[in-house]
Image (cartoon, rainbow, N blue to C red; front, side):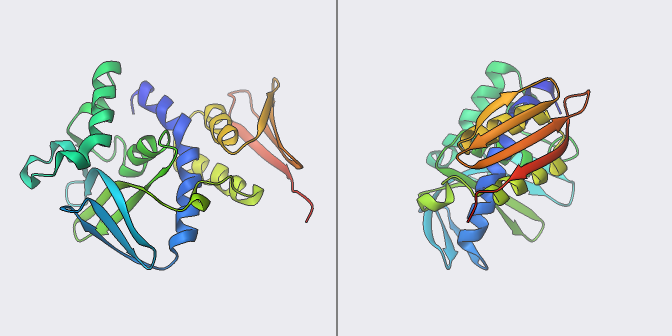
Length: 222
């Protein structure tokens, strides 16, 4: 993983995962079907929503292929806008994960790439649609506002801990980005990060490498 991609992942992984957890609550048990011609995905139950294609994971050779590089599928240009923007960013800032058309999943996987794509898109989530031989990743928009609303403190804690366990990232950058988006005000001291939102409070204690060691929380009274 390149240093510049790691920075982006640190900034957006927690934000994206919080939205994924909310999307999972909204969809529950469901099936999915993509209509490339219409540019939509239908979740049953759940409804039909616009999508932007990101890319695919192939399980056979364990590689990622960006949707803009999948010339054999003749994908509509309108569905490639999001991944084209990432490609342009990759060229401008020399981030190989965003502009190399294909690479090994041991370098970076689809979840990390999709998290970077979804994080700065305030009203989009990403979805991983598995199929025989791989998985399709895409952004979904037009979802209910509840998916993007600030999460209750237990869900914020889940997003924090799951992001830390899933990705090799800068702990402080991830926590600051996630908590700010979730409506917390932050105060960083030498060995801790304190976050407050109304009556909710989190205290993240840091080790000498600025990695989160423990998380203490105070819940809003019911």
